[in-house]
Length: 553
Image (cartoon, rainbow, N blue to C red; front, side, top):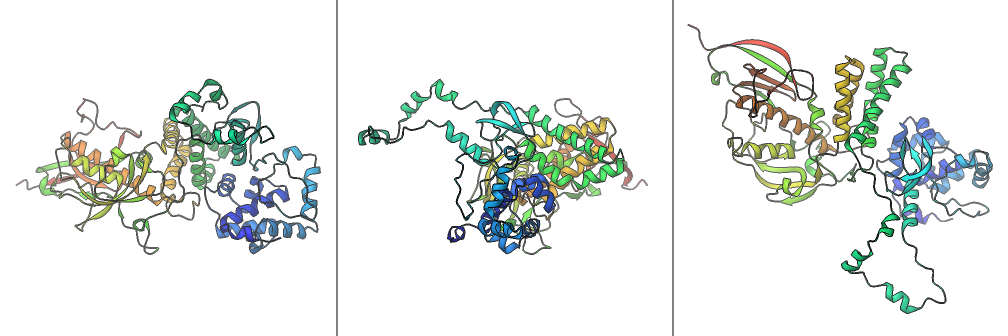
C-alpha cells in the first residue's frame, strides 16, 4: 500500500496517528502508555489531542514501549502496527481479532487511528470509537458534555464528558436536522429551493422552542463550583501524599513539591473546563520574545523594582525603617490581563483597555523627576524607547492621570504586539490556590502551604521556556505576570506615600521599606491601608533597622 497520504501530514500528525493505532492493536489505554514512558496521565491526552507536542525523547520512549524503532514509529500507523505484530509472531488482523473476542471487549476502547492494511479486510464499525481515557464512568442518565454541551452518557473524573473529540463531533452531527435522502420523488426544483441563504428575518422566525430542545442548555459556569473543584483537587493531592508516606510530613512535602508543575497543569485543565476562551498553548512568537542566545534575555523590560531613596530627601533625625513583605505576590499577579492567542502587530497608539487587548508595546516613556517615589519603569540606566508589557503600560498611564497627580507624561506608543485578552483566564485556579493557602495558614499546615507556594511559583517560572513544562509555552504570559507583580508593588508604594508615610526602598517583587506608622495608615475611604497578617491582602513585618539622617550637633 502506498504511503503517499502520510507524506501530506506533519511529523507530529504521523506520530499521533501511529500512537493511536498502536494503542488499538496492543489493546492498551493512554494511562498504560503514560506509565510506560514516564509521563503524567494527563500529558498523553494533551499530546494526542494536539494541545501540546510530543518531543523527540518522548518519541524514542514510545518506540521502546512498543518494542519498535523510532523510525518505524514515524513511518506511519501501517508500518508501526505491522512491525509491532511481527515482533509478536502475529498479524495485525489476528491481534485485532483477539481483542474483539476477549471477554472485556465492551470495556476495551478503540481509537480513531488511520486504517491499517490487513490481509483480509474486515467490515469497519460506523460508530465513533472513544479515545482511551482513564476514570471514565457511565451515567445513569445523559447529561450535557462540559466540552460541547451535547448529551453525554459518560463522565470523566466526575464531569459529564465525551471521552474523545470524535464522540463530540458525532453528537453534534446527530443533533443537526437530517436532510431527506435523494430519491425518485426529489426533483431539481426542490434542491434549488434549498440553496438560497436564509435572510435574517427567516433565521429569527426559525428560532422556535422545539429547535432549542434538540440542544440542551449550556451548564452555567459558577465561579464557586469551578473553584471548589480545584480546591477539592488540591486537598485530595495533599491527603494522598500524606497517606502514601504514612504521615511523614517532610517526605510528603518533598513529594508534593516535586509534583508541583504537573499538578499545576492539571489544576489549570480542571478549572478551564467549559471555559469560553480557546487558549493557544504554543503560539507564534514575535522576535521581541526570542532570546538571541541561551544566556541572554529577550527584548521585554519587566520594570523589576530595585530602588533606594536618596537620604537627602528624607527628614533629619533618627528613624525606624520597617521592611515589609508582600504575601503571595505572584499568586495575586495571576489576576492580570493575559493575551489568549497569537500576538498581532500594529503601528502607532492603541487603546488596549477599550479594545480588550493585551501584549507588548514599544514606547518612549515620560521623564520621571520624583525623588520620593520610585519610577514605575524600575531601575533603568538607558534612555530612549523600550518594549514593555501591558501592566507596565497601564501603570505609566495611571501615573500620568489626574488621579495620580500627573506624575509624568503618558508614554508614547510607537508599535505593539497584542492579542485579545481576559483578566479571568487563570482566576479559578488562583482562587483555588488562595483558598487552600488560607486554610493552611489557619491550620498551621506547613505541608499544604509549601505545596501551594511551589505550584504558583513554579507555574510562573516554567510556563515560558523550560524543559520541566512541555505542555505550555507562553513566555508572553511570564513577562506579563511578573510585570503585574512589580506594578502591584509600585501601587502599594504610591498609596503609602499618599498616606504620609516615607517610602525608603523597593526590593524585587515583595519588599516594601517604609518609615512611619504603617499599621495606623488609612486610605481615602478611611480603611486600614496595610492590614498586618499573612493573607494575600495583608503585609507582614520582615525586619527593622535604624537610620540617622543629618547631624545632631
